[in-house]
Length: 76
Image (cartoon, rainbow, N blue to C red):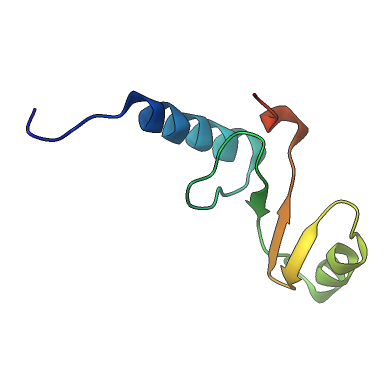
């Protein structure tokens, strides 16, 4: 009991863990439902080229780092 507890932060963490587990993705620091998630790096060069070309679906920072919005995570 010597540490403070923030229930909102615990709920946010549980939401992030459930989202990551059900969508095979990662959530960045301070992620909130509705924010972009990090998708796994592509396995092949062809997959990387497809991802870079799919600008409507992914926010590509580099060939290995891409984010995308999840329709299922859009809570308010």
